[in-house]
Image (cartoon, rainbow, N blue to C red):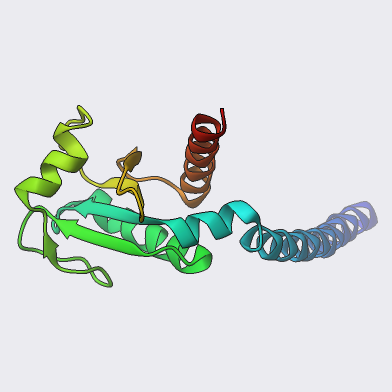
Length: 163
């Protein structure tokens, strides 16, 4: 009986110790994440995006993927101070987004001229001055996937114009 009690005490001790270690690790990771996020918002690349580009988000009001991606995009845009112009392909809206219909001219600009199929959600990055549009993604994405794709796209744009 004593052996069982000792084993149970050791088991509970290890569980409580593991939780303290886990809490300390989570606190360190959260602190590191906050520091790196502050550093990222001050980067020249982020400043260039917020000053020279805006997002065009094309959605359908009854699309579950559009509903899932809209808050991710909104959070990303608010964090990095990038304007979002949203256009719907039906008369339904998404919370927090503008209620502008996708015109035939915009359809031509974003889908037909680029050779893209009309898929929603669709996200494009548009240069404010040249109005050149770059496809960021089609379909929904997690926040880290959106950030990675925008970073890759900006590197491609910079290489193209600095070559």
